[in-house]
Length: 307
View 1 (tube, rainbow, N blue to C red):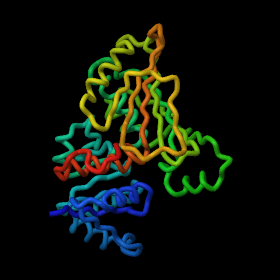
View 2: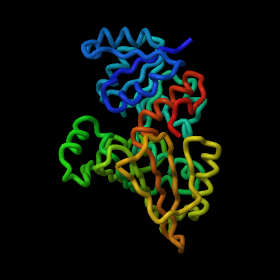
View 3: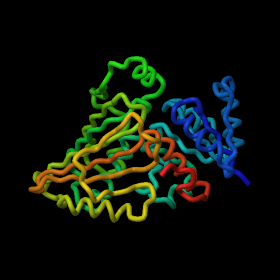
View 4: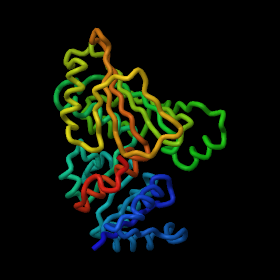
């Protein structure tokens, strides 16, 4: 018997990708409201009570409203917004870091942000193993395709071919910072510098490290070995042994749910660069939702993923 999945916010970028991914899967019956119904609280509430799973692809305030509408229902929720990523009672939906069993048993799962997926994947295992200090003031630089910014940013980039780079979050209040700090167990919020480039999808996230200035830091090879051991056997996350001269994002990027991690180091061991490459709409959004849904439904974790 198939499980019923309600997509609340199915007309946004993430929602549309999730609908597309579920359309051909016999394990699930898709419930999507029409244009009028999706704006009606009663219809959304009824959908939550009818569904086995609800995936919220909504702005933060609307996601909180949706959770309130589902109060008392048996529906299990995956929230793709940032509303509940550090909230009590919610399981952080990063199976490789949080633990697959925890997600499989959870009633409320919050998808990680796209940028924080790369940051947490690189740093959390190293902090846990004591190979990097938790009290260091970390920085993170990242570039993303414009699709992560929603319809308005998509229209802006596609309507103005002169835009080649968008630097933003200059007031240092990006909504991903709390989850980056909490789920890496950092003493200080990282200094996060995100930017957008004229590509529809794709993302590179980087953490520069001054290893020579840290009193408790492993050498570059030790960092790489730790990550390789932590993600050993993962079909989604790959820790690369090689150190290429460059990493590229292309406008023609094929949709992917992979997460590729690299560790680069100076010859004298004084500096390192931790780098994650992913699809902001894949492992950074809809792919993560699919991975979590598979686990919660008792299915093969990678079913329907683009690997």
